[in-house]
Length: 185
Image (cartoon, rainbow, N blue to C red; front, top):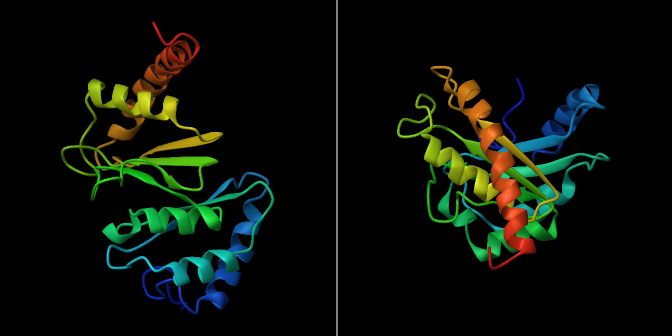
């Protein structure tokens, strides 16, 4: 059995596993749009690891790469700059594990939001006020494309939250455009 690229391999010496992974996901095209690299909470940021791992990833046309780190060292200016240089965005997650982990980072062309439910991760439904806050944040992002994933699926809250969010994001986008066009409104 191959070892994990992220958890066991720590993004190091994983060329064989990465090659196998890309061979397998190639069959998902043309529907494949994003490769999400989720990192364990123990994996600390190093610029060298970011450079060598992400520069070594095959880049498929029309497919973006985003990284979901969990160690607080990834939420620094140095980590953002390193990810930006290799054109990898950083996931914005809720609940936030540390300051800045709830806003997108890295490459700015793509924003990936991953919401796990609150107060109990994976179980809780979001309050309307929290969904409205998410909608405003997404509407104000500078990214050309944004993905919003609800991961509070343990008690099936994700579907309802997503439907309520869709309704809210439309009005937040209209408000954002209005405030950009008319700063006095």
